[in-house]
Image (cartoon, rainbow, N blue to C red; front, side):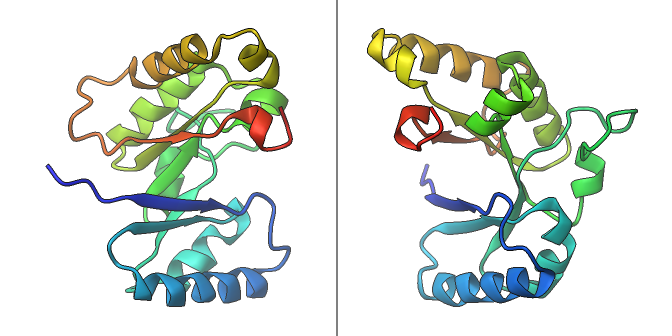
Length: 176
């Protein structure tokens, strides 16, 4: 089985305007048109998902969301459901270190989100990685094992899930 590499860019809270987001998306798309041996994914802020997605119709760039809730609907202020992402994104980042650190996102929640994404035909990008103190304690392997097991723990089948694993050691990105 041949796997296509995935290169994804998380834009976080950038750029600040819709126009800049569309311009950046077009610049990425122009570069991606030159390299079609991989899947290029851009993950703009939720506010720009619709505009960016529409502007890239027919281009060789996939659009991803930066997170989502595992429930389809409910009283979850500020969250985005997988149903809301339908037609806007094909990928979704789950378990990013900043979500874990600042929003208290747990391994269990990440697993539920992965399963929900798969159930809604979104390709989950499960972000895993150890913090600096875990690295110093020699716990890298156990942290990665725990996070991976949690990410797939709610899936009926791993095969065909489209799951992408993004390993990003938290200590290496300046927030850990």
